[in-house]
Length: 131
Image (cartoon, rainbow, N blue to C red; front, top):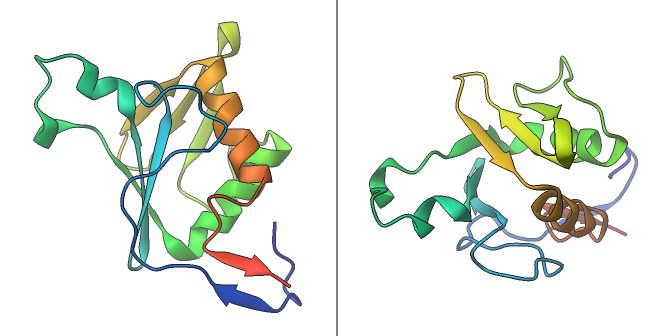
């Protein structure tokens, strides 16, 4: 994603929740939010069930300094790295499960993950842009 020698420009430190431009629906996607020194990830499917309380929605928090490692792992299909506390588990049927160090899990369909991966490759989820 970014090389150590790359000149970078900060894109943002705070954002609203957003999804990849490659996602075809707003109800089934990986959603990301930049918040100061953290990046938050959630699954938009959770709120489709009216029985689910919005305040209880599972959210994975990644330190901003570890975010680029996670994105690099996503692109290279690596499942875990000693450099990050977020594991990526590839499951049957193309589903993908994210698992944080505190055991929070989010499971995405093949289509959801494919749209997210395309967004990662297009640098839609980058905290910095290489020049």
